[in-house]
Length: 303
Image 1 (cartoon, rainbow, N blue to C red):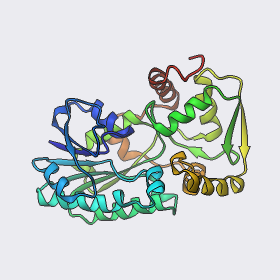
Image 2: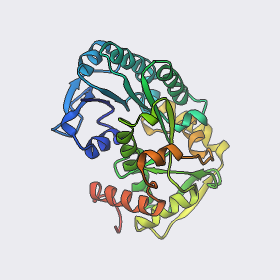
Image 3: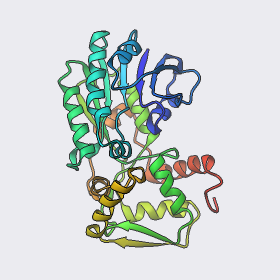
């Protein structure tokens, strides 16, 4: 049996969909949100150690994909679901004799000093010090048709004539397709070479943000658009104000810093786990647009 947190989210739900034996998954959920009937559900919370001990009993491995998202954390004012939740899950693993522990972190730990990145850094340290057979995945921008933040952008890019871009848009992105991340997580479960490893996760191609946006817009059927570049020093205070007015908007200073950070990374271990090259940018965009269009056919334009 495999214990999974974050099963109702973008990555977690796709992981379940692609996993070869769904009936062997126990998914933690706070509400009836995990969208697969074959999966065993545990009503509980990362902050409730007793529920985690009950839920992980009999499991052989844990995939920890849950925690505080930036939007939720800014709304609640804390990152307890990441920091305390990870400690609780490690304690539950030890009490039930579970050795295999996979933690889905974020590449933002290397590029941001904001509260979201700090929460992931603290959680990573606890995982490293746990004494378990751990693997930490650090994905960069994860792309797929069910990604909520990207989905909002796709809806906008599909129909807008004026598309705002923070800064000059020359900063590099190295997006990864969600299916590749999920396949690597599955492959790592029984791959001892990944024990004690931090796996950086990204696509094979670095692309300037201007091109990233433009290629998505064009794939969505929008050929009549213009990129409008907004100075970073203008956007940052607006983002701070937005995070105070409505954290659900997902715009805050840390998000601005993460978006505009320019860096490409090595993905050797990721390649080994996949056993192949990650999906290229062209195919990634085509698949993402197809998934998004199917789920949001009424909001897209000229697809």
